[in-house]
Length: 325
Ligand code: UT7
Image (cartoon, rainbow, N blue to C red):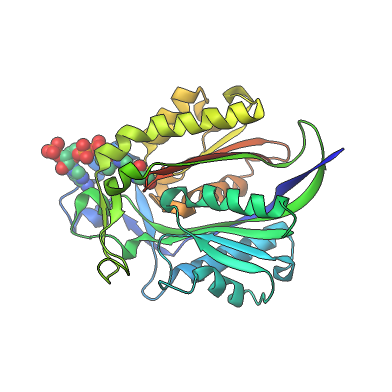
């Protein structure tokens, strides 16, 4: 017997070249390297060059994922781009990626679930691949949060960075059993009662402006660990796995204290945590594929490993995915 699964064939990433350090930020706002490192674990982040867009970064990450997967762009029939910072209000930045890659068939669209965007995009692509309508997908997280930041607000401008990450997902009939590769479960949650705790104060139908990111950081922090651990427990219930089975924990990279707190509550050993928040800051929907690409570049993940992905962010939205590499 076989089971249809979405298997990750490859992963790639792109980071803008400009590095903004905590020391650089301390020259702009009343902050310090010590405060930022202690409260968040962030040392530096990347900032997109003037004129560098989300779709350009997404295309770079997609090309690197296609090369890693050793497949041609022409084999892709689905592109799901998770972003809250599209090039334009419309069309979707995903169609720019599609055009840049020279693809003229299949479907391409953006998905907006803020920091949980990559997990939402993975779940969406997985469902479309398993239902049989599509055969190979690019799932991308790409963000230029630097364009949404209020650079005079020290409580938010020190936290975020720009970048993009992508995976190639392939619909495959895998032999049924515990070793079948691919996405095993995705769990998605949201609760709009929290929508004003992390939001952008502009938009096409409200102000007609792009707006700036606003956050009640302490409130987001207060909910984060409980929401993350709850949804991960649901992923364990759905599959029968436990924390002991996890080889790599690849969380959304918002704050090292949230990552470590969640891992501790779930009983996941620190050596299994992939952390990039120190070098990337919070890149929203891009953070999980960027961390995945980082761990792969260091040759930490091997075939057959069990990976746990999770994220939580604006909305609130949150979610988790379990996949066998
Ligand atoms: O991607 C998912 C969504 N985002 C998150 O997950 C972020 C969740 N929240 C957080 O990570 C944390 O709440 C922060 C890192 C944003 C803040 O850390 P905190 O430990 O919750 O600090 P706080 O907001 O309680 O602020 C403590 C103090 C305040 O001063 P007072 O009122 O105690 O005098 C702030 O004004 O730190 C002050 N502060 C700063 N000081 C120096 C806030 N930002 C800064 C700063 N530099 N950049």
